[in-house]
Image 1 (cartoon, helix red, strand yellow):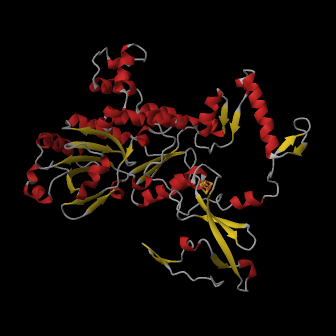
Image 2: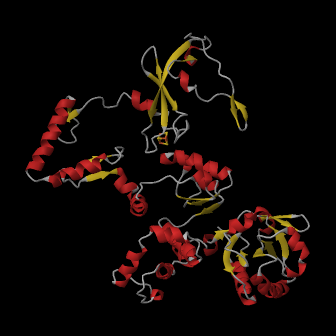
Image 3: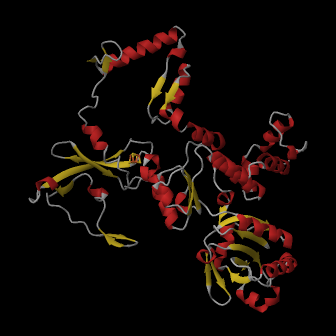
Length: 490
Ligand code: SF4
């Protein structure tokens, strides 16, 4: 190996050629770079790049320790591109690991208190002495039945559950850590319902990402998540952020909601109620994986409070569970959440999806064309008999709205061809603008169940209500009025 610096070829990326970001792995054992401190002299310096892990938070991102082959000292830490989680990208704390290695105040060996507590007097002891001292004390406590006097406290547990085996084996219940206080609520929830500790969702391929006070820019253990959340957003995912302040993350969101601190759970309950009451959940998944039989049995034994509408059914069928669940969640309406969270109920409803609808004249209607107007969107098609039954009500409703300012009525063709629509103009509701939904993007975005289905969108762009199946003129009018009344988001 010579001491000459290797000029790497440019790196091909989807956006074109760029400079290489990392030395190639096959040269990590002996990598040569000019010493920047010797500039303008070109002095080569040789490094061994050793993969290691950042432990400044639980993400445990990959790092490369750049070890000077001459001095044997770590000169710097940079990202490890081969790490599957961080992929070479770290937050600022990763490279700052060098400070911990070189900090003159770091504790290099065990110290034992030599004076009164707080007196600041310490003597250096060996590891052998330290372990012996602690081990004897713990053993004596066990022999004397004082298990309760042994407590294990750790800052950030990084032992992957090892102490959860050791401590119970000792009969010790005293395990405390930062995590007990900081994130145990959320983590206990994950553990109870899925048996995992903070799983990583597939953010990069998500359609909607909801962040509850998760600040991507501040690092923490969300760095690997943050990378993928941004990838998902670049791929078209909608980003919704709950945050009491306009954080940098919130400023990048499609929808920013600022609830009162601590009221987020009320919003989540309302979302759950919405999903349950509109049947927008994976029924088969719930049937297979949720202990619904036990839930119904507990209801029957009176161990759980029974919502009034759940009735006194004794059959233990999944449909009974669904009814019980509907009744249990029914009180968590968006209005309830709005009151708890101090956020407009219409804002807590669903924001309209990104729209690019084609009129039969070839024009395109997008969300920008609809902002500030009250919009009714009806999904229909030429071969649907319930759509045919609904059409007179749509036509009558349109004639009521004729000439009214700020009203848009869109009849979106779902699962049908443009040719069929042109051949059957009489089947389209009169007074509504017929639009095509190429690729059914709008239908998917709204989460339609079928046709006919009607949505009301407030001037703020939030979907305030929907109706699956033929709607009457009265229902259409009620939906329209509620959307029209809904205030713009704050
Ligand atoms: S997110 Fe930052 S602090 Fe946490 S492990 Fe990664 S580089 Fe280290």
